[in-house]
Length: 267
Image (cartoon, rainbow, N blue to C red):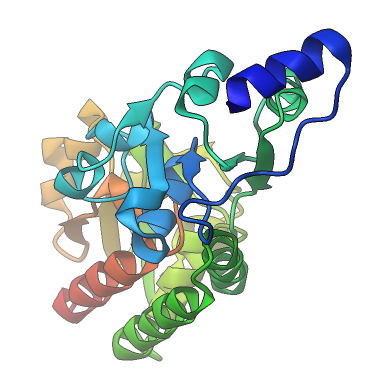
């Protein structure tokens, strides 16, 4: 029915009706962003989620467990795919192409966009917003409480100089969410302290010349696993799962726990 009404809106200018509600209560949703995928999987009923982004089915890009992600259908995010699913609500990134967003709106679909959360507070606000949009604000509050509990359990007043070496050899700046998580769990962002900004490239040579107390390796470049790193006895290395880097929401829980585990192992 929505497809017919949307076609009517395009061809004759008639107004599309407001979004329908699943079961008369909760909206059906298509998520086009891996970060919103992970949050919605926590705060919406499974039956509400008609599809998530294809990134969440990719081990290299997902921010949620693959087994959980594959419970849901995935979409490439084209207008045609989304329209065929006939959702009440489309949730995407604030970087969604304007033409795509405009096309979805013209077809009568409600579109909500979510930006990159660079702080814990911003992420918790996103959790609350998405839970409210899904019709389950209480689940958003429950997830925020879990995030706060995980951060409290991982908290440390230590100040261990550490570098987080991300995929492609880049480092996070002070304005990144993961940098706040490092600070809360007892680390000092040593790359930022050296004047490096968000996504600056850190060479192996520069690292070897001035190693930190801890090196968190989240990339797979050859230099990031060079044998010379093992010759630095005062620097301790630990693996950090790249899936914990890019999103907030429930990802914060896993990231805080892993950072606390690494910090406890640093002498």
